[in-house]
Structures are given as C-alpha cells and as structure tokens.
Image (cartoon, rainbow, N blue to C red; front, side, top):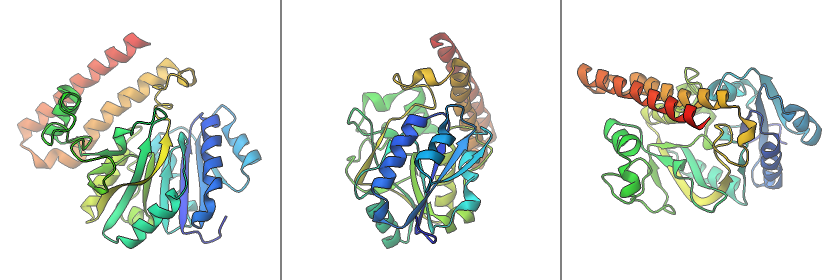
Length: 301
C-alpha cells in the first residue's frame, strides 16, 4: 500500500468475519487501479475478525474500539487517514473491476460533486434501491414509509421520489443522498462538515452526512457506470443466510435505533422549515411508528 495514497478505504466491521474476508480480497484484487490504503475499524467483534485481518491481510491498518455504532466506528479511523479521498465501504460488499478507477476519476473531474456512490447490486442481481435516496421530507416519508405508494407506483415522479424510481437505474444523476455502504468523498470536505454525526447510533448517518455536504454547496451523485455486490442486511439481522449472527435483542436495538435516527434527522435538519404545530405532529407520528416497529420486530423474534 502507498505511503501517500490517493484514496483511503474505511471498512467498519462488526462480527462479519467471512464477509469481511471476501470484501478485503476483492479490494486487494483491484488495488492497483488507484493508489490506496485500507483501514478496518472493528466494533469489538467477538467472531475473530481482528485476528483474521492481522493474519491474512497484514497490509490492512486495523483499529479497534467499543461497539458505539456506525458513526463513531467510522470516525474512529479519521486520524489514520492519509488519502485525499475517503471511501466508506461496507464489509458485506464485493468490489468489481474499474470501480476504484472510474469513481475516483469522476470525483476528480467533477469539482462540484462532494460525494458519490456507484451502483449497488444485490446477490439476486437486482439493484439495491437504497443506493440512491431522497431526503425524508414529510411528503416523501408519507408516500414511502406509511402509504407505501412507491411500491404501487414505482415509476411515479409524485409517489416514487424516495428511491428515484422515475429515473432509470443506469442513468448518472444528482440525488439527495447515497448509501453508506459505498460512500466516496473528499477528506477535505469531510473535515469541513465534521464527518459522521456521532449522535446517531445506526441508520440515518449517511443521510445526515449527505445533507451537510449539500448544505456546504456540493452535489451528491449516483454513478452507475460501475457496480459492486452488496449482500445487505447482515448487521440488521435481515439476511436469512446470516440471521443467526445477530441476536433478537440486538436486532430489536438496531431496528429501533433506525426510528430514533428519523427523529434526530427531523429535529436537526427539518425543524426550522415547518410550523411548530406541524413539527409536533411529525414527532408524534415518528413515535407511533417506533411503537409499531417494536411490535413488529418483537412478534417476529
């Protein structure tokens, strides 16, 4: 690995040893596309992940800490970064040819872009819809989370705004937000906006970071010229193959943390945009949604 790399790849890991092994192997395969370094930040894994990294990937820089969530886990690597660009990459991903080369080139050639994601593809071959998202403004949240109209009218500009279903998945275009599973940005921009907000524990951190980057005057871009594989849902306990890796208690904690993130995002970024009465109505709706989610997760446990 380079002493002064162009790109720093940060991979946050929590008990996903086998997936992390596959991810690092794919990174190594294409490491010569750009000068890069790899930093694995481990959230107190108990499955032997740190030992595996030390033994099988000695060129990877490993930093360990307590499991304090996605934001703190990624930010833990901040002081180790030597690259001009930073890529947050999930351990449940597999990198393909030209991903590093083309995404880094695009960011360098388009100075107005503050962050981008390539296309994320599920093992089934379908696009991971969360790759590109709109901010959860009230109408978007209503049509996506409550009424689920984007499932009924997946290509409607009115009802399918959250996942940009009305824009072809192979079109490069600006978006509100990209997913933290593949999140490429400039270090100088991350330093300017403060990296991930550590007030989030799980979910919402990538949305919030995109909000801050756009607020700083930069575009966020979905760039599907290249793609990676995303297993998805392992940490949340949603993946059937890996479900045994996550306890029911941890699964509930993570799912409820997602609703807490909705409230934090709203209070932090949207509160001043709407009348006080409307704001209280939105907070009540979020808390009701949290109860519904708690019931749903508990019944499935």
